[in-house]
Image (cartoon, rainbow, N blue to C red; front, side, top):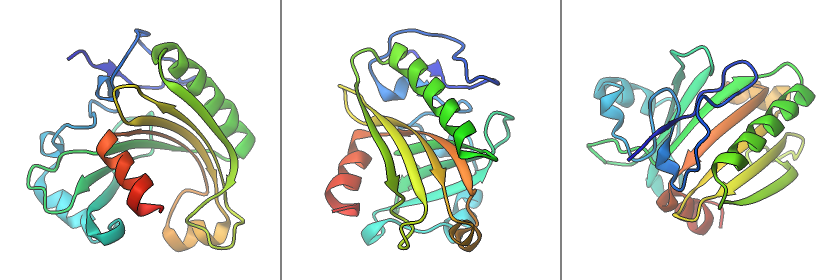
Length: 196
């Protein structure tokens, strides 16, 4: 299957703009959903990061985040099924920090516009400004746009503007742009179990 490279250089320009129909057509740093992380990382590294980052509801999935080797992202996050010895990737995201939420929102808009030219048949949904679900105070905000792919799964482009307290507590970036690719199976889990 043809793979498109999802690398954003400076102004987040796509190197190739071709109509795409499947989320696995996209890569971040040479990685795509449904790949085995063992092609890119060692089992020991994945296991060492597992204790640092938590599991999802009922421990069905877990996520690791590591520093990016590429200058386009500060970190990469991968989500796997618990006890999967092949470490198949169900969610992949690249994150970039920003000093200002408005700067982030401009880049989010640019990325979303470019994605809309690639995923012509995707259902594009702008969720707008919302309270970030990981912050019980309601003070942290998210601004997410989704591209629901007809073949299943979605791509999200979102800006997160966290409070300093939440950012410090979780060791997360305070203001960041996140580009994520989510398989249909993991999307179903998020909708029907994790956030139900």
